Image (cartoon, rainbow, N blue to C red; front, top):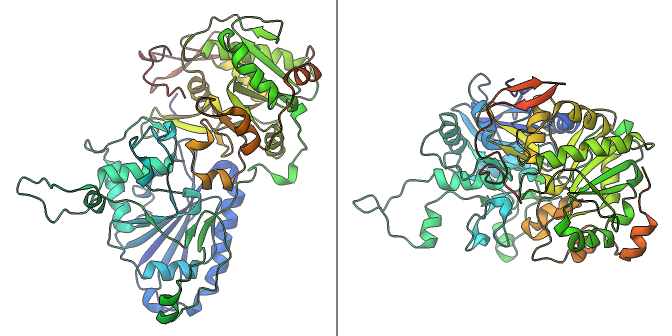
Amino acid sequence: MQLKPSFLVLPLLLCLGRVCVGKEILLIISCPQQAEINCRTLRESLLQQQQLNEAIPTDYAYDIKVHILQELFNYWTLLDALPHLRGQTRLLNTNTDWIIWCQHNTHVASLRGLLEQLHRRDAQELAYYGHALYDAEATIVHHFANYKDPTWFPYPMLSAGVVFTGALLRSLVELVAVNAPNATRHSEFAIDAAHELARFIFDNLAPAVPNADDDGKTDVDFVDMLQRKIILKSADYICPWARVSPAWSLQSSETTAKKPVPLPCFLHAKPEVAAGNAAHCVHTTGAHIYFAIKTCAKFHKERIPIIERTWAPDAMRRKYYSDVADAGIPTISTGQANVPTGHCAKTLAILQLSLKDINEQADIRWLMLVDDDTLLSVPRLSALLSCYNHTAHMYLGERYGYRLYAPDGFNYHTGGAGIVLSVPLVRLMVEHCSCPTASAPDDMILGYCLQALGVPAVHVPGLHQARPQDYAPELLQLNAPISFHKYWHTSPEHTYTRWLGGTLANASSARHASRPGKDGLGTPLQLHGRGLLQLANMGAGWDGGTSKHHLDL
């Protein structure tokens, strides 16, 4: 079964000013399925703003094309969407001077102000502008890029909006569309679309080098090297959130020289809200969520007490699933031996056991799969889930992609951040999903199976596969964190109280007070037996233990 992503393009031609001069600006709204209302709201805002543009001088008036790019499965990364800006859609033309890339939660506060800023810049330069994010230290979510010193490398905050010159984006489209053999992708995984875009541009495109030696090589220091590379240009009118600033009317050069006045935020990010139907929100608490916690014998004493001291008191319906039964905790044996990586058979066994348990309880709407080194804010999770339809097939988590540039690519939610499933979807998975091997990567196999079943991976920005220090502060401040993963080189209790808004509990009393009562490529998918989806001809490396294809965080 081959899945072909599709997108919906809604073109809108706006002519700003009294005279159209043939220059084009392409404004793209990248829109996941569940955020169509937000995308339409942004489009309507732009329509309203065009009524205020009579004062724009005609010498920099543009034809503006506004397109909602409806992503389905694979088009959430900008790099993988680029080939579709040409081809049949013909969105990107030779007379396109600027491309403004927005997400569904980007706010265009002043289209007029943004146009003025673009008019002052060279559209023929290979350049792009945005709010620059930086890593404090090398992080696995960025493939340990620039591990010796990652603090110099800027990458854009996509939700704040990014502006590309037409010259740069046309070069990128040509490079990606033909799958040029000299184009460098450092990983088959898509984790952080913003960082991976910035790194791809840095590695694959560069302005002409004027002072090269005869042999084509140039002996330059680090600063000169950066000048000969394309890196994100920080724009103070593109902000991580709205800020109050002086009116952006023209100011005299004398005033500006004495005291620079910051520009207002013509583009900025807005906090994410639950992308379900707000009109049908249903009050949800921790009691409506079944927490299936994956552990093993060697971590019973080390990790489970941390959970009990932190988020366990808010998770009344929780069960610890292990390779062995331990009545002192208690844990439930899955009947599967522990393996170093992968855990596919163990995870499917957990889904099966959990579903049996859920069927014996009342009013459980969601199941959340978590690791024993995952920290959670159950109240924030409950608030998020209130506006998602628990009666539909919902698959929520931190979305990663594998080989999204290829026909066999797929999305999946990474396990350490926590994977949230509606109960009807759990029933569907138990019926149709299976493992190629016991040690295959569980989160990837689940994602592959669900994409084949037509269930999209809905990204939740508050869920995090890594630790707080592995993310730019602006991202953590924009959207309240719901989860973090991994305890190494950090204090889990501090992370819980500082970032997840929790208070610590007495381990023994919390455990007994809320202990639950009696209450689981590029290859065709084939149906076998009772309708299980099997991954036929899965290549070597999907066995988990020696996998080169599983980014085990």
